[in-house]
Length: 65
Image 1 (cartoon, rainbow, N blue to C red):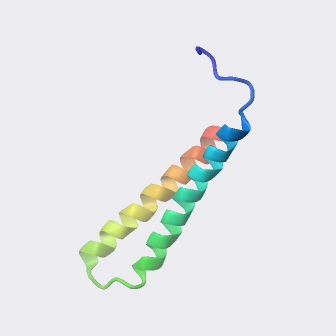
Image 2: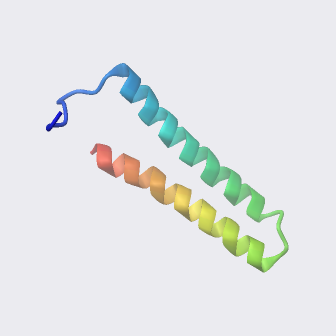
Image 3: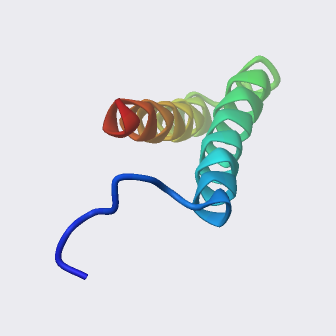
């Protein structure tokens, strides 16, 4: 298939919804855990995780526009 179809299937739509949900939940969990961590090195890692999942979520949304 050389061209992207003009429509997406319901299965594709379900997968897109899942990808958005996975990234949103992961970003929310990471942000939640930030308030429970004292170690600055671990905080930095968790902040990077939250940012990565937020970026993935936004990338998918922007791709769909």
